[in-house]
Length: 173
Length: 280
View 1: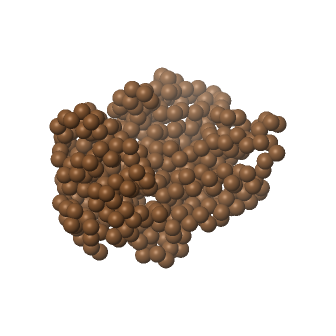
View 2: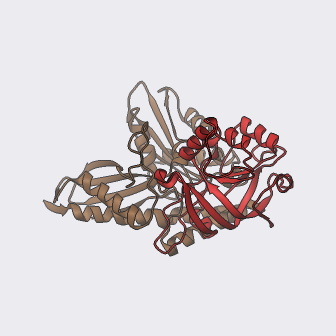
View 3: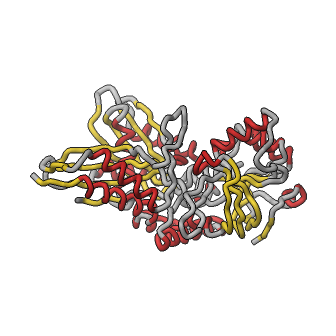
């Protein structure tokens, strides 16, 4: 299986093909509903973002708490379409890729094509399995949101399927 | 009259919350294995292998099968000859949930107000339903359900002159709308009859029944099988990649209704359909 590593620059993204299975390694940031709302507000208000979105990878997940043994919590993907209203703001700031589950809106699909970004699918409901592929984690923003805080994760060989590639081709049609 | 201390109820709720969240139900596991066997597509086979490995890891290491450890529904059958002592029943149930979610590092996903959205940080309150039954027994069923699939559930008030055809057509619409989003292969809980509020209650409660148990009512069994076949023809498949198994099981619960209506509720549930029961 193809192995890819962050940063996912435009040239790396262009080579990914819809339906292709990949193993991703490197830094990703978690963000789900509440964090997206905050990030979008910061962008609209021209405020500083807690992390650079340039070529960044955002993973839509809200993990279970880290355990006493240091093992990262279960962390499968959440439904991507709930982020669709906010994603255009993030793509405009250079967001390289998103990871989630399910379909995206037509608008997001068009913008993925325009920005030569990519949308990956992770295996929904495989939280414990995916947690094994998180090597380190740190909360870097919106700590008050609890499970919805932004975590910086170092992942290794995280199994993904290319859902929408940089040409806008969508696995769900 | 039998006395039951609320502490026992609290402990049972806590134990059931952890069990449901970390140990995938035997019937669901059987269905996933069956789906894996039926699958011929490489990616879909790999997805189902990951799901089976995930269940094994979660059980062995007592970790959450899925990070969405849900909003907890608790169903309690209380024998009419039982007297609960030592405190309030609702408080005991919520304390049990609270303790389990803290102890087992489960995610706290409950917000205080749907508009203000401040996390209660305890995963409580839970939704508690009590039912008086004969005898001295108290039976607790805990069902934590994630919202990816809860969001795809729906209710329709059909006409009394409608029947199986209209019910099936509504169920298919609901599953099509869920598509790949809510973690297929799905389990469908269907509530038929009752009132606007009773049908959804039954649809969720139906999810706690084993999916390979034959419905004791023959006409419902026939409808369950008919729905299962038609839903699987939709060809959504694991992760929505259009392969074999879209639905692993359909459970229907019905109850008497009004001459003017036929309420139908469909509770869509994912391949991590969770519940655990115990009698005290």
